[in-house]
Length: 146
Image (cartoon, rainbow, N blue to C red; front, side, top):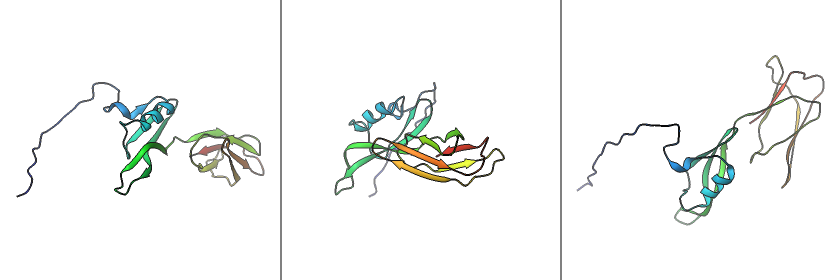
């Protein structure tokens, strides 16, 4: 005999501009980290930090037991950050950034052409830095980090 399931139609309507689930949108990264470490979070949950930009994280286990269940504490892994844009400066241009990954760097001139430049990453425990060097003029160009 197969199991029987009762199907109950459930509907909902958004009545305001807030998330449907209480713990999915946070105003600070600190609040998101506190939530990830709490007993309410679960591995695989997707949350957002919304301040001057929107950054999306997934909650992952720091380790997993033999059953594949995440062992606490859980932590955040950034899966999306908006593109950061800078006006080109003098060569070499130094950009300090605060991302948890090495961003892709694209330099686009004022005509929309992608420019070849030398990109150097200098990352230590306390500094995350990109150094961009080029020859010639890149007046009006933009640097995009993603």
